[in-house]
Image (cartoon, rainbow, N blue to C red):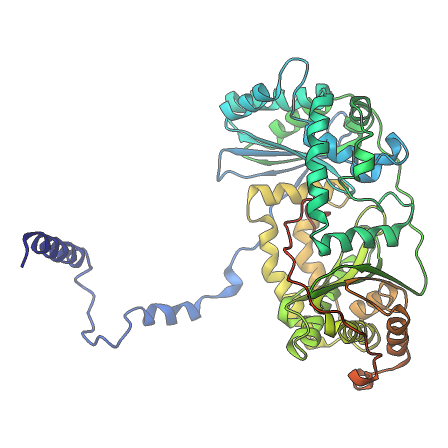
Length: 527
């Protein structure tokens, strides 16, 4: 045997002998190689009492500071880290308050907030945060403008990071050169958007649903609007909306409540006080069916059906969240997945969602399918919605859904960052500080009658906007299909495939490349 192989063999035998020497010699060893030694341990896991698992939500302090800026605080001692979130009522819905048609102001302000002040350039700003190991970010959503700071709770680290955050909020310059950089990047994003049918469909959905409402336009604006944005617009946005009386504060980490109150007062006291933003208008809802076709050459057709929903403050919100999970928010267990994928193989995935915001949000159903299955898939999806609204809620499915939500609920406070995101949402939407701890009890009380009543109040299969991104579409034939669904009852009354008017399909082009979504999403956190 060659010398090298001999050395390797000896070393291996020595390692095995050493490992065996570390084994507890009092344990009996089953010499039968067909027996898994871990089976007894695995079986023992069945005896764990699940009721003893501690899934209690963290205690939330509602701190009353001298500036009347709401501050929610959770004390955690596991890590020497502090998460601070400032949530301003200054999302993209406020863009038009700076100037009519000037969409994208909030988003650009968020992107340029850390690009420098009269005292510090962008490199120096980044260096300060890097030297103390802090993470700073700003992002605009439709409702919210969120500023986050994560830093060690050690005052030597916290103080410089906090000072720089306040410097940026008060004195960011928003230079024209930086604006040009954002405009250039957005133009590139617009080119990519044309290759992303699902994003084009979403933008069209909001425009069709909201018309002249502030929610109608994309968060990052349009090519035409952002080219009009000047430093004075961004400075006006900061002075009007990034003020103490238009924000709430969330703090989570290794700090006591008294120190958190002091920190919140320092933040609120060092900002201009200003005033709270005015309430958003209520959107005008459309009646009947609106069918919008967006021609797009692809082997896949993309479909979304939706209508304006309700607000964050609606008492039916929790029942609607349960209903949405049953309809299309729970994977293969949902009604839509069973009807569209499991039974018919029309799509890889179909889902429904509901957004709850300051003004009424959006209820939608979305999926993609082959061009030759387009018409029948819409028929099936719409009929599933009709039956879900009209037929009684299945008590068994309801209990399974509620149990799934309860099991997943601890993920909402599984880390400091997730806790602080929830605190920011609670403060922004003026919810109780006890909302986290009360969720499980409130969910348990939801009955099938509650869900059914909420569904019939808020889901309207007779008033839908349908956006179809496909090669071709017969709108008249599609409306006949939708009207037929409304006139029938029960799952057995679906029209047959051959009853649907045929569509002449052009040859399929090559599959398109769907690029990542370049636009901020709507939901930073939800409870």
